Amino acid sequence: GSYQITYTARDAAGNTGTATRTVNVVDTTPPVITLNGASEITHECGFPFTDPGATATDGCSGNLEVKTEGDVDVNTPGVYTLTYTATDVSGNSDTKTRVVRVVDTGKPTITLNGAETIEIQVGQSFEDPGATAVDACAGVLEVQVLGKVNTSVAATYELVYSAQDPSGNKAEVSRKVVVKEAPVVVTGNLTISPPEVVDFGKQLIEKTYKQKIVLANKGKIAVNVAIDVKETANNVFAVTFESPKIEIPAGSVKYVEVTFAPKKVGKYEGKVLFVVSDGVQQPKEVYVNLVGEGYKPKRRFLFISCSPTEGTTSYVGDLMFITMASAVMFFVLRRKRATNS
Image 1 (cartoon, rainbow, N blue to C red):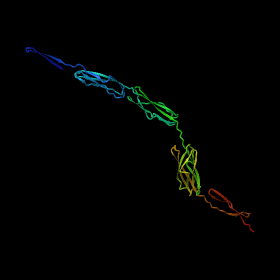
Image 2: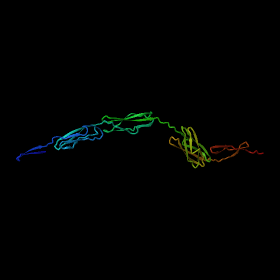
Image 3: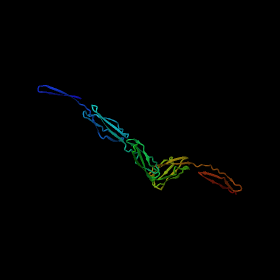
Image 4: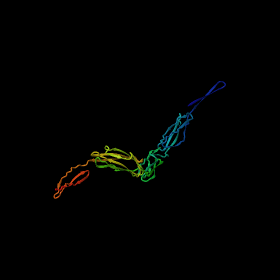
């Protein structure tokens, strides 16, 4: 502003004299801006950036507000400039700049899908679960896989997964695939003979017929067989065994006896369930059907006629036969004529 200073002098006689001076106070000195932190900053791509800012002081106005111009794209590598400006009330201003270099030096992060080590058996199929890759700057990246797995040969195979971001940073992660020989599983091996049907065929009623079901263990360990007679056709069939649960050692044979005793003419059906277990494999159910037919023998009338034989004293009966069951019996009857005296 403009200020006046008045000077006054008085002599001994009381006479006074005055003089004035005008003082113009001006502000021509700009403020001083001080950056907080370095004027050049290197910042890693993909991470948030916080501007450390700046302060400004003025010899006349004191502390001033600092305005900032410019942006930093933390997801794109490059050089960015931030400009700080402060202006005092007299219009004097100061400007400072800061350079922010956004760089990408970090490797992508690869994450395996599934376990780091996978074990399979020879002959099993293998499908690579793959991996994913993410970069702090570039986002999701494509993953390349190097290596193969031969499921026909027992060995340890390595699959290497790699990903590279646009800045050339590369990461690798590996997975081991162990192909093992299939373990030798010792099991029982039971054969049932006849395997499906015990057929007694056509038999006379009121008689009893027998057959055997053979249980042969051809495996290397014992098997247990649980026997459950499901259908006997009203006791026409009977199944005889030493126990409802039979243990058959390796290489051994045991028998189950089945009898068929038809009481009436007709066809009969029965059923037996064998539940086989060796303690290694899942229990196996085997059904054996029992079938048979009962019938009566055919009866035939017997006719006999006798006639004398010419020139002799004998009578000869005609040939006759009787059919019983499946056998045919033949009879010849001869009778001598009494001699006349």
